[in-house]
Image (cartoon, rainbow, N blue to C red; front, side, top):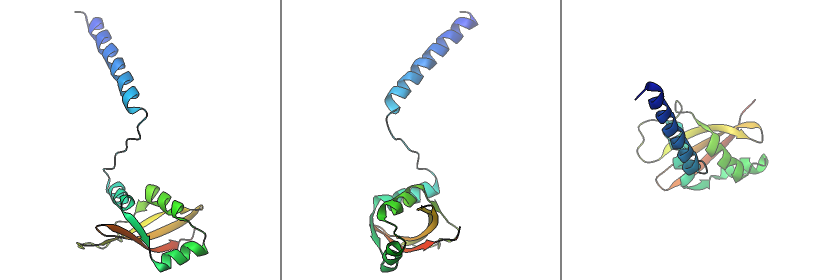
Length: 125
C-alpha cells in the first residue's frame, strides 16, 4: 500500500474521531481540577458554607452578596504561602479574587463538613 493511501486512511479515521469527540463531549462542562488551587476551591465549594459575624458585617457594609462570594470561590487564587502547615482538622486558606471590580481576600476555615468564611478583606487597588 502506498504512503498516500495510508496517510488518507489515517486522516479519515482521525477526522471521524474528532467528530465523535466533538459530538459526545461538546455539550458537557468537563473541567480538570487537578491543580492544588482548583482542588482546594472545589473542596470548599461542595461543602456547606457559613459566615462569621465579622464577615457578614463586612459584606453588609460593602454590599457584597453570597453570589459574589461564590464567584470568588470559582475563579479565585489560593495563597498557599500564608496557609498554616501541619494542621490535621481544619485548615485556613487565604483566597483572593474580585467582587464588584474591587480586589477582595477571603479567609476561609475548611473543616470536614463545613467551610466557614472567617474574614472578608477589601484590598487596595
